[in-house]
Amino acid sequence: MAYLPMLLDLANRHYRVHLRVFSVCAIIALVLILVFGQWWLFWPTMVWSLFFGVHFLTYKSLNIDNDWIDERIARTTDKAYDVSHIENIRDSFDSEHTRAGKKGGDEAPPRRTPDVGSDKDSKDVQAP
Image (tube, rainbow, N blue to C red):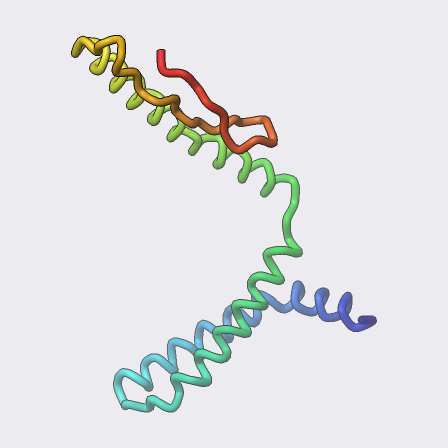
């Protein structure tokens, strides 16, 4: 395990070189495969792609900083629009269902909605 910090440092320092070399060689291999029919190059390229994928994930995990975290939080918060969209659909359905003249004995079963902020997954909510 003494080699792990050294390997992680090496992976971090040489990622961009590996990216350039891999990109050039993969393009050359693709041309040779498609133009000249050199299909034996497919498997070495795939194996190298797997190793490059591991290198990429290692590089990305070592280079997380506060700016990336703030950007990710903002992006995730901005995309939380789906909750309000679902609420609008539910409210529209409820108002149409109420206008149709629902009889007293035909009550809908309680809906299950996620309880955000609690360790319970869901709770029963009565329809208005």
